[in-house]
Image (cartoon, rainbow, N blue to C red):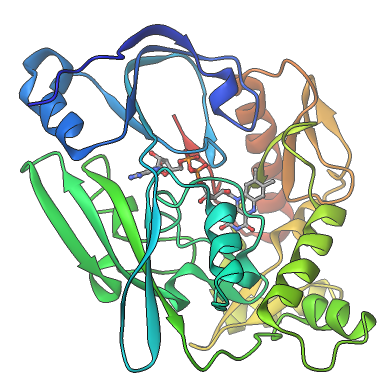
Length: 342
Ligand SMILES: Cc1cc2nc3c(=O)[nH]c(=O)nc-3n(C[C@H](O)[C@H](O)[C@H](O)COP(=O)(O)OP(=O)(O)OC[C@H]3O[C@@H](n4cnc5c(N)ncnc54)[C@H](O)[C@@H]3O)c2cc1C
Protein backbone atom coordinates (compact mmCIF):
# COMPACT_ATOMS: atom_id res chain seq x y z
CA UNK A 1 0.00 0.00 0.00
CA UNK A 2 1.37 3.44 -0.89
CA UNK A 3 2.22 5.53 2.17
CA UNK A 4 0.19 8.68 2.70
CA UNK A 5 3.22 10.90 2.28
CA UNK A 6 2.97 14.53 1.11
CA UNK A 7 0.22 15.20 3.68
CA UNK A 8 0.12 18.96 4.28
CA UNK A 9 -1.39 20.51 7.42
CA UNK A 10 -3.19 23.83 7.99
CA UNK A 11 -3.17 24.75 4.32
CA UNK A 12 -4.41 28.02 2.83
CA UNK A 13 -7.15 27.22 0.30
CA UNK A 14 -7.00 30.63 -1.29
CA UNK A 15 -4.82 29.52 -4.23
CA UNK A 16 -7.15 26.54 -4.69
CA UNK A 17 -10.43 28.38 -5.37
CA UNK A 18 -11.17 30.77 -8.22
CA UNK A 19 -13.45 32.84 -5.99
CA UNK A 20 -10.31 33.75 -4.04
CA UNK A 21 -11.82 33.05 -0.61
CA UNK A 22 -9.25 32.92 2.19
CA UNK A 23 -10.24 29.66 3.92
CA UNK A 24 -7.92 27.05 5.45
CA UNK A 25 -7.95 23.25 5.39
CA UNK A 26 -6.84 21.03 8.29
CA UNK A 27 -5.17 18.59 5.88
CA UNK A 28 -4.50 18.49 2.14
CA UNK A 29 -3.14 15.64 0.09
CA UNK A 30 -2.30 15.67 -3.62
CA UNK A 31 -3.72 12.49 -5.21
CA UNK A 32 -2.03 11.00 -8.26
CA UNK A 33 -2.73 7.28 -7.95
CA UNK A 34 -5.43 4.83 -6.95
CA UNK A 35 -3.08 3.35 -4.33
CA UNK A 36 -3.15 6.65 -2.46
CA UNK A 37 -6.94 6.47 -2.18
CA UNK A 38 -6.74 2.88 -0.91
CA UNK A 39 -4.15 4.00 1.65
CA UNK A 40 -6.44 6.78 2.95
CA UNK A 41 -9.35 4.39 3.21
CA UNK A 42 -7.19 1.91 5.14
CA UNK A 43 -6.06 4.62 7.59
CA UNK A 44 -8.74 4.75 10.31
CA UNK A 45 -7.88 8.30 11.42
CA UNK A 46 -7.81 9.78 7.90
CA UNK A 47 -10.85 7.84 6.76
CA UNK A 48 -12.94 9.19 9.64
CA UNK A 49 -12.37 12.84 8.67
CA UNK A 50 -14.76 14.93 6.56
CA UNK A 51 -13.45 14.72 2.99
CA UNK A 52 -13.45 17.18 0.10
CA UNK A 53 -12.40 16.15 -3.39
CA UNK A 54 -10.87 19.20 -5.07
CA UNK A 55 -10.14 19.84 -8.73
CA UNK A 56 -9.53 23.40 -9.93
CA UNK A 57 -11.78 24.94 -7.25
CA UNK A 58 -13.78 26.81 -9.91
CA UNK A 59 -17.19 25.61 -8.79
CA UNK A 60 -16.84 25.86 -5.02
CA UNK A 61 -17.63 28.43 -2.38
CA UNK A 62 -15.74 28.04 0.87
CA UNK A 63 -18.12 29.35 3.54
CA UNK A 64 -15.50 28.86 6.28
CA UNK A 65 -12.42 26.80 7.11
CA UNK A 66 -12.56 23.12 6.18
CA UNK A 67 -11.85 20.95 9.21
CA UNK A 68 -11.09 17.82 7.27
CA UNK A 69 -9.02 16.23 4.51
CA UNK A 70 -8.84 17.80 1.06
CA UNK A 71 -7.96 15.38 -1.73
CA UNK A 72 -6.45 17.48 -4.50
CA UNK A 73 -6.79 15.50 -7.73
CA UNK A 74 -3.52 15.68 -9.66
CA UNK A 75 -3.51 12.54 -11.84
CA UNK A 76 -2.26 13.33 -15.36
CA UNK A 77 -2.42 11.81 -18.84
CA UNK A 78 -4.49 12.00 -22.03
CA UNK A 79 -4.52 9.24 -24.68
CA UNK A 80 -6.52 7.68 -27.48
CA UNK A 81 -7.62 4.34 -25.97
CA UNK A 82 -9.78 2.80 -28.68
CA UNK A 83 -12.21 3.23 -31.52
CA UNK A 84 -15.76 2.30 -32.37
CA UNK A 85 -17.43 2.38 -35.78
CA UNK A 86 -18.46 5.98 -35.22
CA UNK A 87 -16.12 7.43 -32.61
CA UNK A 88 -12.53 7.72 -31.40
CA UNK A 89 -12.24 7.12 -27.65
CA UNK A 90 -10.07 9.56 -25.69
CA UNK A 91 -9.34 9.04 -21.99
CA UNK A 92 -8.10 11.80 -19.68
CA UNK A 93 -7.05 11.58 -16.05
CA UNK A 94 -9.06 13.54 -13.46
CA UNK A 95 -6.29 16.04 -12.73
CA UNK A 96 -5.93 17.23 -16.33
CA UNK A 97 -7.25 20.72 -17.00
CA UNK A 98 -10.53 20.72 -18.90
CA UNK A 99 -9.46 23.28 -21.46
CA UNK A 100 -6.14 21.44 -21.84
CA UNK A 101 -8.14 18.38 -22.87
CA UNK A 102 -10.24 20.38 -25.34
CA UNK A 103 -7.05 21.79 -26.89
CA UNK A 104 -5.50 18.30 -27.05
CA UNK A 105 -8.50 16.86 -28.91
CA UNK A 106 -8.48 19.75 -31.38
CA UNK A 107 -4.74 19.37 -31.96
CA UNK A 108 -5.42 15.69 -32.78
CA UNK A 109 -8.11 16.64 -35.30
CA UNK A 110 -10.96 15.46 -33.07
CA UNK A 111 -14.07 17.65 -32.84
CA UNK A 112 -16.86 17.40 -30.28
CA UNK A 113 -15.75 19.35 -27.21
CA UNK A 114 -15.12 22.72 -28.89
CA UNK A 115 -18.31 24.42 -27.62
CA UNK A 116 -17.03 23.74 -24.08
CA UNK A 117 -13.72 25.54 -24.67
CA UNK A 118 -12.21 27.61 -21.89
CA UNK A 119 -14.41 26.29 -19.08
CA UNK A 120 -12.08 26.39 -16.05
CA UNK A 121 -11.43 23.38 -13.86
CA UNK A 122 -10.43 19.76 -14.13
CA UNK A 123 -11.51 16.80 -16.23
CA UNK A 124 -12.48 14.90 -13.06
CA UNK A 125 -15.05 17.51 -12.05
CA UNK A 126 -16.59 17.86 -15.51
CA UNK A 127 -19.17 15.06 -15.07
CA UNK A 128 -20.22 16.26 -11.58
CA UNK A 129 -22.48 18.99 -12.94
CA UNK A 130 -22.43 17.82 -16.57
CA UNK A 131 -20.70 21.03 -17.61
CA UNK A 132 -22.39 22.88 -20.41
CA UNK A 133 -22.05 25.97 -22.56
CA UNK A 134 -23.05 27.34 -25.97
CA UNK A 135 -25.60 24.64 -26.79
CA UNK A 136 -23.46 21.67 -25.75
CA UNK A 137 -23.06 19.54 -22.62
CA UNK A 138 -20.42 17.13 -21.44
CA UNK A 139 -22.87 14.22 -21.84
CA UNK A 140 -22.95 14.77 -25.64
CA UNK A 141 -19.44 13.30 -26.01
CA UNK A 142 -19.27 11.29 -22.78
CA UNK A 143 -18.45 7.59 -23.08
CA UNK A 144 -17.64 6.33 -19.58
CA UNK A 145 -15.68 7.06 -16.41
CA UNK A 146 -13.81 5.28 -13.67
CA UNK A 147 -14.33 6.24 -10.04
CA UNK A 148 -13.16 5.00 -6.67
CA UNK A 149 -15.99 4.28 -4.27
CA UNK A 150 -14.89 5.28 -0.76
CA UNK A 151 -17.79 3.37 0.75
CA UNK A 152 -16.88 -0.04 -0.70
CA UNK A 153 -13.24 0.49 -1.72
CA UNK A 154 -14.14 -0.73 -5.21
CA UNK A 155 -13.75 0.76 -8.68
CA UNK A 156 -16.89 1.89 -10.47
CA UNK A 157 -17.10 1.90 -14.27
CA UNK A 158 -20.04 4.10 -15.19
CA UNK A 159 -21.50 4.65 -18.65
CA UNK A 160 -23.67 7.60 -19.66
CA UNK A 161 -26.92 6.10 -18.37
CA UNK A 162 -25.35 5.24 -15.01
CA UNK A 163 -24.16 8.84 -14.57
CA UNK A 164 -27.79 10.07 -14.75
CA UNK A 165 -26.80 13.37 -16.36
CA UNK A 166 -29.24 16.27 -16.25
CA UNK A 167 -29.02 20.05 -16.46
CA UNK A 168 -25.98 20.83 -14.25
CA UNK A 169 -26.68 17.53 -12.54
CA UNK A 170 -25.55 13.91 -12.26
CA UNK A 171 -25.61 10.91 -9.94
CA UNK A 172 -22.54 12.42 -8.22
CA UNK A 173 -24.74 15.12 -6.68
CA UNK A 174 -27.16 12.52 -5.36
CA UNK A 175 -26.59 8.79 -4.71
CA UNK A 176 -22.80 8.91 -5.13
CA UNK A 177 -22.29 12.26 -3.40
CA UNK A 178 -19.34 12.33 -0.92
CA UNK A 179 -18.53 8.81 -2.00
CA UNK A 180 -17.18 8.56 -5.56
CA UNK A 181 -13.81 10.00 -6.55
CA UNK A 182 -13.58 10.25 -10.33
CA UNK A 183 -10.20 9.01 -11.57
CA UNK A 184 -10.55 9.31 -15.34
CA UNK A 185 -13.13 10.12 -17.99
CA UNK A 186 -13.39 8.65 -21.50
CA UNK A 187 -14.93 10.64 -24.35
CA UNK A 188 -16.37 9.38 -27.64
CA UNK A 189 -15.24 11.87 -30.27
CA UNK A 190 -17.55 11.53 -33.28
CA UNK A 191 -15.98 10.53 -36.63
CA UNK A 192 -18.75 12.34 -38.53
CA UNK A 193 -18.38 15.66 -36.75
CA UNK A 194 -20.88 18.42 -37.44
CA UNK A 195 -20.64 21.98 -36.09
CA UNK A 196 -23.14 22.72 -33.33
CA UNK A 197 -24.30 26.29 -33.92
CA UNK A 198 -27.67 26.01 -32.16
CA UNK A 199 -26.68 28.73 -29.68
CA UNK A 200 -27.64 32.00 -31.38
CA UNK A 201 -24.73 34.07 -30.04
CA UNK A 202 -22.22 31.50 -31.27
CA UNK A 203 -23.85 31.30 -34.71
CA UNK A 204 -23.68 35.12 -34.90
CA UNK A 205 -20.00 35.14 -33.90
CA UNK A 206 -19.19 32.58 -36.60
CA UNK A 207 -21.21 34.49 -39.22
CA UNK A 208 -19.52 37.76 -38.24
CA UNK A 209 -16.17 36.16 -39.01
CA UNK A 210 -17.44 35.23 -42.48
CA UNK A 211 -16.99 31.48 -41.86
CA UNK A 212 -19.39 29.42 -43.94
CA UNK A 213 -17.83 26.01 -43.18
CA UNK A 214 -16.12 26.40 -39.79
CA UNK A 215 -14.03 23.56 -38.40
CA UNK A 216 -13.98 22.50 -34.75
CA UNK A 217 -10.91 24.65 -34.03
CA UNK A 218 -12.66 27.69 -35.57
CA UNK A 219 -15.66 27.17 -33.32
CA UNK A 220 -13.35 26.86 -30.33
CA UNK A 221 -11.78 30.22 -31.26
CA UNK A 222 -15.24 31.80 -31.52
CA UNK A 223 -16.32 30.39 -28.14
CA UNK A 224 -13.10 31.65 -26.52
CA UNK A 225 -13.64 35.13 -27.96
CA UNK A 226 -17.22 35.30 -26.65
CA UNK A 227 -16.21 34.01 -23.22
CA UNK A 228 -13.33 36.46 -22.91
CA UNK A 229 -15.68 39.34 -23.70
CA UNK A 230 -18.38 38.28 -21.26
CA UNK A 231 -16.81 36.59 -18.26
CA UNK A 232 -14.32 37.94 -15.73
CA UNK A 233 -10.93 36.23 -15.62
CA UNK A 234 -10.69 34.61 -12.14
CA UNK A 235 -6.98 35.52 -12.07
CA UNK A 236 -8.03 39.18 -12.07
CA UNK A 237 -11.43 39.11 -10.34
CA UNK A 238 -12.45 36.19 -8.11
CA UNK A 239 -15.54 34.36 -9.35
CA UNK A 240 -17.02 30.90 -9.90
CA UNK A 241 -18.69 31.54 -13.27
CA UNK A 242 -22.50 31.49 -13.22
CA UNK A 243 -23.50 31.62 -9.58
CA UNK A 244 -27.09 30.43 -10.14
CA UNK A 245 -28.61 27.79 -12.39
CA UNK A 246 -31.19 28.94 -14.91
CA UNK A 247 -34.50 27.94 -13.27
CA UNK A 248 -36.53 25.37 -15.21
CA UNK A 249 -40.30 25.97 -14.93
CA UNK A 250 -43.47 24.59 -16.55
CA UNK A 251 -44.56 26.40 -19.74
CA UNK A 252 -47.73 27.64 -17.99
CA UNK A 253 -45.65 29.42 -15.34
CA UNK A 254 -43.52 31.04 -18.05
CA UNK A 255 -46.69 32.21 -19.83
CA UNK A 256 -48.03 33.78 -16.63
CA UNK A 257 -44.68 35.51 -16.03
CA UNK A 258 -44.50 36.69 -19.64
CA UNK A 259 -47.94 38.33 -19.32
CA UNK A 260 -46.60 40.46 -16.47
CA UNK A 261 -43.00 40.86 -17.74
CA UNK A 262 -43.02 41.05 -21.56
CA UNK A 263 -39.21 41.18 -21.73
CA UNK A 264 -38.78 37.83 -19.94
CA UNK A 265 -35.93 35.82 -21.49
CA UNK A 266 -36.66 32.09 -21.71
CA UNK A 267 -35.57 29.03 -23.66
CA UNK A 268 -38.01 26.19 -24.43
CA UNK A 269 -36.68 22.72 -23.52
CA UNK A 270 -37.32 19.52 -25.43
CA UNK A 271 -39.63 18.15 -22.72
CA UNK A 272 -42.13 21.04 -22.72
CA UNK A 273 -40.55 22.83 -19.77
CA UNK A 274 -38.87 26.23 -20.10
CA UNK A 275 -35.53 27.56 -18.86
CA UNK A 276 -35.61 31.13 -17.58
CA UNK A 277 -32.49 33.29 -17.93
CA UNK A 278 -31.43 33.73 -14.29
CA UNK A 279 -29.17 36.64 -15.28
CA UNK A 280 -32.18 38.54 -16.68
CA UNK A 281 -34.21 37.95 -13.50
CA UNK A 282 -31.33 39.25 -11.34
CA UNK A 283 -30.75 42.21 -13.63
CA UNK A 284 -34.44 43.18 -13.42
CA UNK A 285 -34.09 43.32 -9.62
CA UNK A 286 -31.39 45.96 -10.08
CA UNK A 287 -28.47 43.86 -8.88
CA UNK A 288 -26.10 44.15 -11.85
CA UNK A 289 -22.94 45.99 -10.77
CA UNK A 290 -24.11 46.30 -7.13
CA UNK A 291 -22.18 45.08 -4.09
CA UNK A 292 -22.63 44.17 -0.45
CA UNK A 293 -19.25 44.81 1.15
CA UNK A 294 -16.57 43.12 -0.91
CA UNK A 295 -19.06 40.72 -2.52
CA UNK A 296 -20.43 42.04 -5.78
CA UNK A 297 -22.42 41.32 -8.93
CA UNK A 298 -20.35 41.55 -12.12
CA UNK A 299 -21.25 44.68 -14.04
CA UNK A 300 -21.33 42.94 -17.45
CA UNK A 301 -23.26 39.81 -16.41
CA UNK A 302 -25.64 39.69 -13.45
CA UNK A 303 -25.33 35.89 -13.18
CA UNK A 304 -21.71 36.14 -12.03
CA UNK A 305 -20.95 37.03 -8.41
CA UNK A 306 -17.48 38.40 -7.85
CA UNK A 307 -15.07 38.81 -4.98
CA UNK A 308 -14.02 42.44 -5.27
CA UNK A 309 -11.11 41.78 -2.91
CA UNK A 310 -11.00 40.10 0.47
CA UNK A 311 -14.64 38.95 0.56
CA UNK A 312 -15.34 36.13 2.99
CA UNK A 313 -17.45 33.11 2.10
CA UNK A 314 -20.11 34.42 4.50
CA UNK A 315 -20.26 37.74 2.61
CA UNK A 316 -20.71 35.91 -0.70
CA UNK A 317 -23.51 33.81 0.83
CA UNK A 318 -25.23 36.94 2.22
CA UNK A 319 -25.19 38.53 -1.23
CA UNK A 320 -26.48 35.36 -2.88
CA UNK A 321 -29.32 35.13 -0.34
CA UNK A 322 -30.30 38.78 -0.84
CA UNK A 323 -30.50 38.15 -4.60
CA UNK A 324 -32.52 34.98 -4.09
CA UNK A 325 -35.01 36.86 -1.87
CA UNK A 326 -35.47 39.70 -4.37
CA UNK A 327 -35.94 37.38 -7.35
CA UNK A 328 -38.40 35.22 -5.43
CA UNK A 329 -40.41 38.25 -4.23
CA UNK A 330 -40.63 39.72 -7.72
CA UNK A 331 -40.98 36.62 -9.93
CA UNK A 332 -42.00 33.81 -7.57
CA UNK A 333 -39.00 31.79 -8.75
CA UNK A 334 -36.36 30.38 -6.39
CA UNK A 335 -32.81 30.57 -7.75
CA UNK A 336 -30.57 27.62 -6.94
CA UNK A 337 -26.81 28.22 -6.56
CA UNK A 338 -24.58 26.37 -9.03
CA UNK A 339 -21.32 26.21 -7.01
CA UNK A 340 -20.99 23.69 -4.21
CA UNK A 341 -20.99 25.35 -0.75
CA UNK A 342 -18.29 23.85 1.50
C1 LIG B 1 -14.99 32.00 -15.15
C2 LIG B 1 -15.76 30.70 -15.00
C3 LIG B 1 -16.57 30.25 -16.04
C4 LIG B 1 -17.28 29.04 -15.92
N1 LIG B 1 -18.06 28.63 -16.97
C5 LIG B 1 -18.74 27.48 -16.88
C6 LIG B 1 -19.55 27.03 -17.99
O1 LIG B 1 -19.63 27.67 -19.03
N2 LIG B 1 -20.24 25.87 -17.84
C7 LIG B 1 -20.16 25.12 -16.69
O2 LIG B 1 -20.81 24.07 -16.65
N3 LIG B 1 -19.39 25.51 -15.66
C8 LIG B 1 -18.69 26.66 -15.71
N4 LIG B 1 -17.92 27.08 -14.65
C9 LIG B 1 -17.89 26.27 -13.43
C10 LIG B 1 -16.70 25.29 -13.35
O3 LIG B 1 -15.65 25.69 -14.19
C11 LIG B 1 -17.07 23.85 -13.70
O4 LIG B 1 -18.14 23.42 -12.89
C12 LIG B 1 -15.90 22.89 -13.55
O5 LIG B 1 -16.26 21.61 -14.03
C13 LIG B 1 -15.42 22.76 -12.11
O6 LIG B 1 -14.19 22.04 -12.14
P1 LIG B 1 -13.19 22.09 -10.94
O7 LIG B 1 -12.12 21.10 -11.20
O8 LIG B 1 -12.75 23.48 -10.70
O9 LIG B 1 -14.11 21.57 -9.74
P2 LIG B 1 -14.05 22.00 -8.22
O10 LIG B 1 -14.56 23.38 -8.06
O11 LIG B 1 -12.72 21.69 -7.64
O12 LIG B 1 -15.12 20.99 -7.61
C14 LIG B 1 -16.49 21.09 -7.96
C15 LIG B 1 -17.24 19.88 -7.37
O13 LIG B 1 -16.75 18.70 -8.00
C16 LIG B 1 -16.22 17.80 -7.01
N5 LIG B 1 -15.06 17.15 -7.65
C17 LIG B 1 -14.00 17.76 -8.23
N6 LIG B 1 -13.18 16.83 -8.76
C18 LIG B 1 -13.73 15.62 -8.49
C19 LIG B 1 -13.34 14.27 -8.78
N7 LIG B 1 -12.23 13.97 -9.46
N8 LIG B 1 -14.14 13.27 -8.33
C20 LIG B 1 -15.27 13.53 -7.62
N9 LIG B 1 -15.69 14.79 -7.34
C21 LIG B 1 -14.92 15.82 -7.78
C22 LIG B 1 -15.85 18.68 -5.83
O14 LIG B 1 -15.83 17.93 -4.62
C23 LIG B 1 -16.99 19.68 -5.88
O15 LIG B 1 -18.15 19.13 -5.31
C24 LIG B 1 -17.20 28.27 -14.73
C25 LIG B 1 -16.36 28.72 -13.69
C26 LIG B 1 -15.66 29.92 -13.82
C27 LIG B 1 -14.76 30.38 -12.69
